[in-house]
Amino acid sequence: MRWRKLGKIWHTRTYPTWQYAHSMMPTADHLWGDIWRIYFSGRDNNNRSLVGFFTIDLNNPEKILEVSEKPALGVGELGCFDDNGVTPASIISLSDRKLLYYCGWKPRGTTRFGLTPGLAESKDGGLSFTRVSRAPILRQTDREPLTILTAPFVMADREQWHMWYVSGVKWLNPDLPQYDIKYAKSLDGINWEQTGKVCIELRKDQENALGRPCVIKNNETYRMWYSFKGRGNTYRIGYAESGDGIEWERLDHLSGIDVSN
Picture (cartoon, rainbow, N blue to C red):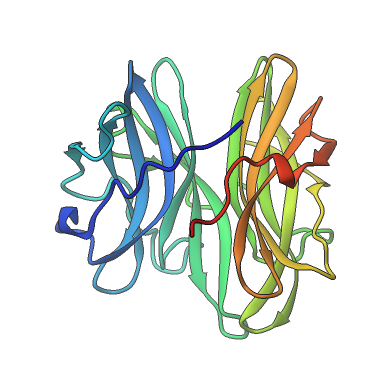
């Protein structure tokens, strides 16, 4: 697969009133035909990430068809895991509702931040979301003791729900964490079994981080794109393939996209 860059489609001039700066974590939801809604996080004037959206036609992606006038999902209650910000990661459309898997931000005292995933649902077609639970859907365990459990990508595949997510390995210093990509499974998309299985392993002598897994399934092959960060603090997009979604072969040279000139 080869990717062709079409350029910037979301500009600062289109900021809605709730967005003061930044645009992060674009998460696409197919509406109909070539019409897609792109959820993303923008920061308010308190530097907290909120989830909003804009809608585009893939045939003319620079023309914005719709912009959320207010956040579709705001921060959580004071003291909860997401009281300092929320960023979208994955969306599932069901017959009667949409499920939004998101990252909750929490400032920390000894390390720079904590990130854990939450789940919200929409019953108005994705215009607004309410939390399924005020608690995160993944938890710290002895195998995963750090509060970096984030960027969940979820796929409903027959009777099984799959999740690939970013999981903290260790903090090299209070500002620099290491993290890789792990796997969890579920029967309902709400209650998750954290297997602790590493899907894409960090090359610790070359890389600091693996992030934002995105997966599609072609016939019986799972295909994952993700980001990896080298020691020089530069990001690239990697690629891997799997026959079962659990055991993966890393094939970064086939990602089909690289940095521009």
